[in-house]
Length: 239
Image: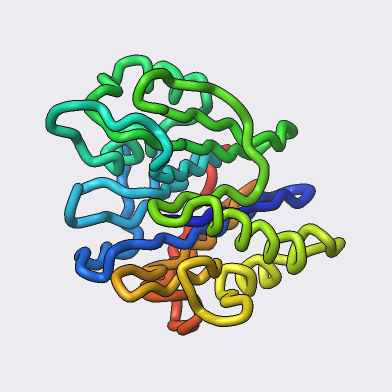
């Protein structure tokens, strides 16, 4: 249950992420700094699994992970998928991520989709999808939607709103995307971008802006429709 969208400008990219969770799950901690091998990363921490669903680093790489509920669940005791982001968060490029993924015993993880955003000329978003049987490499277009319930209906509803609010317009801004992630359509529901169900809801909103010299990570706890104050963290990119 999550939705991610993004867009590239000439000299930067933006990533927007609504994290949807059960209301009984403990709240995540705002982005924290992690340093390894000369790379500094920022990521919120899920206290349940000790990992995260999104990170960005001083090499200009942003990673995001969504659950892939349509995959095949491996047998046996599973490790939190958030640990994947924790392991990969200081990677400098797709080649390093590819090498690290090859070292993982993927059968210990439930299916997921991992996205990589990078600075530079190539604006394609590399995607690795663990189906529970195989790791598939591909590319994704904005937005990407994950849902454990009513997947077809949720995807159709959110794609319709994306078309209306973003795709049909020219020169969209970051605020247009922030507005999209606050959107309820006709009313707050399981199908709206800002998701509200009796048992679950959107519990945080992330906006990552990566330019040529620095990264800004704006993190809001709670549903984005509440428009609470964000915690803003900055990273200087390695030159």
